[in-house]
Image (tube, helix red, strand yellow):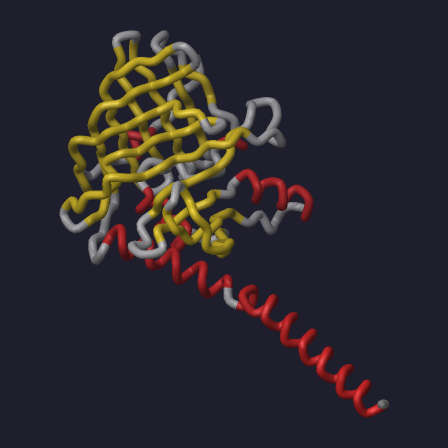
Length: 269
């Protein structure tokens, strides 16, 4: 009887150890898996090409409450900066983000042409949200960034690998560092077969409340090869799960020599 009980205890201990090991083993590789997956995404997007800047032009639809208008769009980006110009019958809407500036800066303007400064806590995510190649490149090359593997999921019926990319703020106190790392977090969803980004998610925040998250989601589709680089020709931006911007590109130009002056942030007026 004692032998039987002892055998049972040994068996249960073995099962417990095996079960615990099986549960913990996936967490032993995320740092390697995350970096590998992001590298796969970068390779799928860029191939062997070096892209320093991009200009995308096309049509757009903007939805804001009862306002629904169509127009034309020109978007430009380099690593760390972007410029968005949307032209409608009601006027032009622009946004410029430059996180490579010291200090980071950004502004937006509507049809009245008045520039409004974008608060610092809304400048911590990647400004090239419409061009996933720069998002992947930034996560791989920029110092002070960490890439984490979340797991395999389903996004809009597509099997995806879910990664997060965020900045670290080691010079700040731990609680402040954690807050700013959260403010900088991007969630990237990669197609498990092609490794092309399916979606990007992050949060924006009211100017006077950086602790209130307002979810933004960007969906990429209609990938086409342009000079060996994969570009999503259809980009949709959602705010709180509602579509606010629908971009359909017609032309893409790489490496036109965009300078920093193209991304100069106007002073608030």
